[in-house]
Image 1 (cartoon, rainbow, N blue to C red):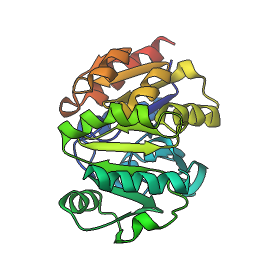
Image 2 (tube, helix red, strand yellow):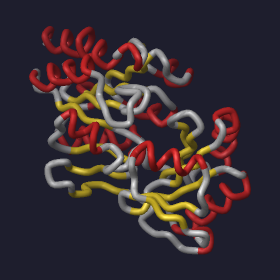
Image 3 (tube, rainbow, N blue to C red):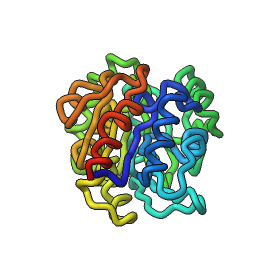
Image 4 (cartoon, rainbow, N blue to C red):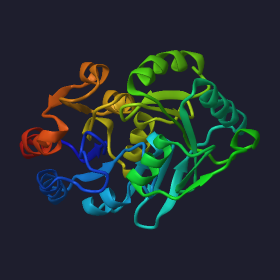
Length: 269
């Protein structure tokens, strides 16, 4: 049986910045009525995920910044957090400039970047985030940065991810999330470790945790969960690691997972 269900947001639960499809939301309500705690694990920050978590009606821990920060929605308090060292943040910002990609850091609920560009404008408008432009961002020491994000052309990002993962092994966790996104976290901060933390916090054993995702940022979470599921539109590596593959995000795969796998397993005891 399953007591905890962890959902990636983008391209898994929904294709929308702010809305959960009605079919998925109805299935989530059925899971909650059956006593399952449903939460999200997302690369978004706490503010960027607010509309989704409020739609779900979560009352407890939520995983943000790809596993770097966990909040309790009942109090809005941060109950777990990691940050990248300031020297590494500066190094990554300089690298982004060198590679010719957009790079930004997170400060609180907002983002900071060097100069105006289409990628930055699209990102903060997509999530309606506060932002600041700082031409001297690369010359400063930034503390409390949970994540650095690069945005590049999708093909270029796919090429860069394995190269940068090797280059920063042991110093940063390098993952892809949405198409064209390259995420840098603390090496021990990922959705897998954060899901394990939440399960322990709630007193739920690993084999009673289910998780579903689509991209490389979800890989460790899917590998760790007792039941790791991938939507059909997932990255090949995620599909290979998953215990089961459910319909694509556009076909409400989350609802299918709840109604055809999780709730039947719980009814069987």
